[in-house]
Amino acid sequence: MNRNLFENAREAVNRFTQNRGEGRQAPANKEDMQAAKQAIQSAYSQCSQQEKQQLQQLEQELESHHNNLR
Image (cartoon, rainbow, N blue to C red; front, side, top):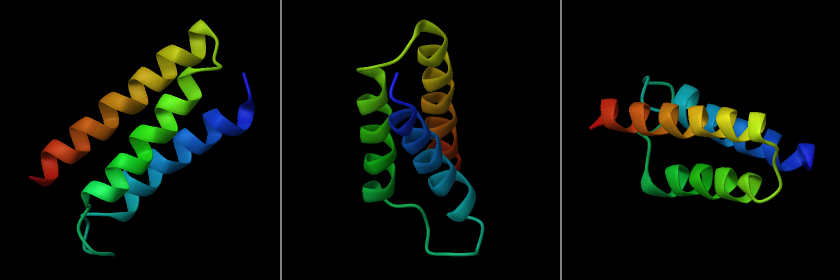
């Protein structure tokens, strides 16, 4: 798989989960979450089975963090 797509997805999720909602910046918003989701979906198109499992974990982390902010 193209390493850049996978790394982009991981970084997008990290930005959303670590930099938002903890008083350091503005609360998480739909655009940030959508960007992270799109990065994950792009990475799915060219990944191995092992990477798909990691991407699924990133999706779960993203959703969990988003639900905790509500």
